[in-house]
Length: 71
Image (cartoon, rainbow, N blue to C red; front, side):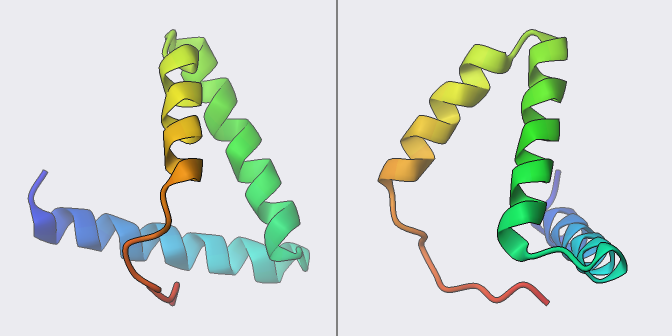
């Protein structure tokens, strides 16, 4: 995946999340919990659940590289 395609996908995901948060009047933490649970289920179904949990544990320990704003 090229960097341009990655940025395009990120914008699309951000836009979709914004629409869903507005449509269902969700607080960001509630929405994040739902999305995280679905992502975990997808990884479990694909056999990558343990790797995903390891990734999460590593991400939690590292601060974000930038204060990127979701549009």
